[in-house]
Image (tube, rainbow, N blue to C red; front, side, top):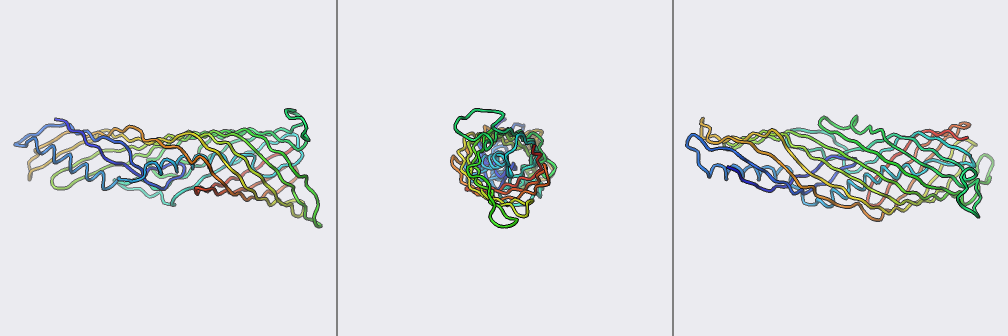
Length: 345
């Protein structure tokens, strides 16, 4: 005997989480009635299980949830667009860690629940070269041009997440920045760092899955299973920003800026289960036993096409070594933090 029922599954965990989702999931129950059990037992059993799944995992805004996941992926990716401040240098090598946050702050999990929050943290390398070495543009002062390429492959997310969560990510970006206005002294110990404009293209890939036990026992009906939800996000971003700031006492840079991003890509959600068992009792007599499996066709949504953002940061300069910390916030709300160190030659 087999009966298929659709149900909604919600609230996953990802780079940055916080909303709910509706996924096209099918609950398949297959088993046999025995000891006087009848066909109607299966129908009632399936209806009870479907209602329980809906009451625990039901969401109403799958598109919004998956859009938020894509925006979080974008936030993590774009934060590596030439972070910190630049001088008239020939080479630059930077190692940094970036993190993106969205939603609440809890990672607590228990049976029949899914975390409502996730954090994506990546580490990687940025390499830059001065325009004097790569002469692509005529009419620009090559000393003010800086080309960069960033690759982030080390994912620290799983160290922050709770048991049952696995995450994997990769980002890279390439772009160019130009010192539109040169630096100049203002006051003793204070100088204007000019205005730097930067543009680039970024790609971000993020995959995450979360497994949670699902248990249901009521009115003689019992189900035991492990449910796994997974999110797959791939995004592309065209970013531009303008940054200005000051240097205090020849060491500390303080800077701020505005940016705009055009985003493309998609994020999908799907669910599955394995090893589910179902039984129904009439007093002390088992009248039905079988198996239950969950399978789902991915629900898909795109990130926000246009995002505006504000950034603020600081960088301490110790000879050729620069140590920087940079924060960003964008609309729709995604918060990013980027910190690291660079060697400038």
